[in-house]
Image (cartoon, rainbow, N blue to C red):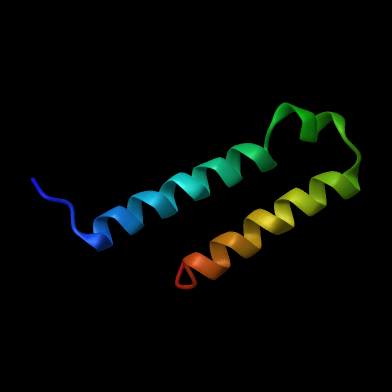
Length: 55
């Protein structure tokens, strides 16, 4: 089955989202201070809002 450009972009976006989610919820975040946690979660929120505005 041939992948279309849209399929490849969707897979790439999913991979980037997954990496961002894992990074912002990693074990280091739970041992950091509230400011570091907020920074990571704000980044994840902005990423999701920017790539999936209807979500």
